Figure (cartoon, rainbow, N blue to C red):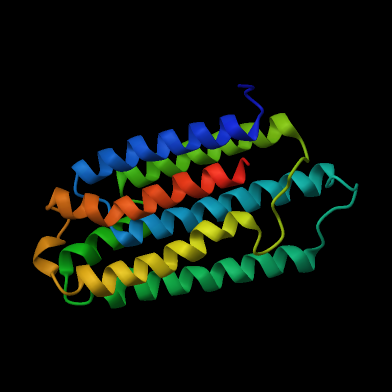
Length: 199
């Protein structure tokens, strides 16, 4: 498996994500907000790295992304962020102080597992982009990479409303089995979409 192949990158990124997330669950620091915010920040970092690379070196067709395209991408990401913070970070956890505190710590990058996961992804993707050049730049809105975020938002809302809000006593960040149960659908989703993207 070549180091510059998309398959190698996806496999490595998924393994790192799984290991650190499992460690985060053991620490009681993983919530639905954690996962969705992580997927959002992953997309943002990937897009920023691709924009910087394309502005310096050009895209595959020789053109550079216009300011309008860049501003449009960032605006959509900002809208996503507001939705994720307000809906998943606060509203759906209203009354569950433990989860709100975990979510706020994650938001301001005071969650060690989350921070490590993001830093490793940023370094890994920057190196990957440098190695493959302008191949498969992901700057446009709503490409296949956004699919995991869209599905995660839907799945996250269902989990929060059907399980977390109805049984807050089990979702305080200290019940490991409940945290694992909540996170499992997202882990499976990431693995499944990652495999689809390589086909």
